[in-house]
Amino acid sequence: MTFLLQKWRRMAACWGALFFIAASGAAIGQEVSEPTQEEIDAYTVWAEEFESGLDRKQGTIKILGGKVKLVVPAEYYFLNAEDGRSVLEEAWGNPPNEGVLGMIFPSHYSPLDDESWGAIIYWEGDGYVSDEDANEIDYDELLVEMQKSIQQDNEYRVEMGYEPLELVGWAEPPVYDGENHRMYWAQDLIFGESEDHTLNYDMRILGRRGVLTLSYVAAMDQLEEVRASRDDLLRMTSFAEGSRYTDYQPGDKKADYGIAALVGGGAGVLLAKKAGLFGVIMIFFKKFFVFILAGLAFLFTRLKGLFGGNKS
Image 1 (cartoon, rainbow, N blue to C red):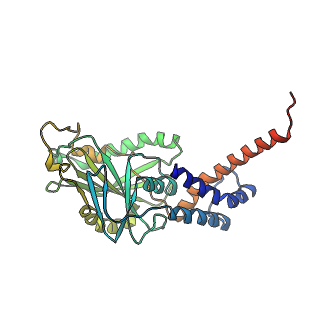
Image 2 (cartoon, one colour):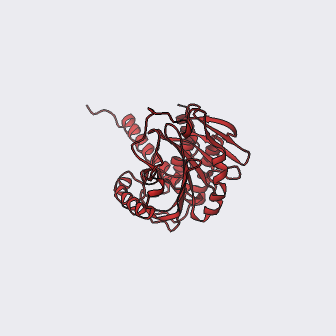
């Protein structure tokens, strides 16, 4: 309920500016090359409300019912599941995903900064994942299969109103760290007709009952910055005693897949994009301009009912 009230307050705060834009004769579906000053002003109101509603956390944070502990230093901050989904869906324009447990950002970035990046935290609780096949995987062959899968999923994405997705290739080939039971790799992605490439840098930390996923969303030219932070995020993340990979006991639930599926199984599902400042503004107006037109239509219907009389 609090989330809905916050969302409504952001809409209400922008009502006047959006009414002006709607009254100016802008058409649904019209291509907009760049935002007007009125649009930027309305976005600024929304962005300030959005920023102030984010609860940035540092220090010791427990997630997943205490099974996972994060120790977030001053150089980073954590957003909980609700705030993380708000960033991904409202600000960056990604499809809804209830599996998000939170996000981690560098302290010097806001999620709305053009140059920001963030790491999404997911949990895949399918059971203990055996790493016996880790050294037998042909990742070039797996890449081709992932590209095919994403192409097949694009029809659904478009039907749902989201951009199609292209997996260009590996930005960093998969590497499995058998000593610490974790894996990482990076994908080079293109969303829609954008000329910019998106980086999704993924890490998987194996546990007794499933796999913790940390998935970076950034621009391709931020690969070195993201790679440099990888060990920081791995150090701040750990399973509690009894939930670690090495705590596995015979009879525990086991996943029906191995390491290869951790890389290829989420193709097109967990991939996310990061919108720049211009993109965030356009996402904002795509959502709220439609809301305003719907509101105006409702108001017109109400006025017609009040003043048109009842001929029966």
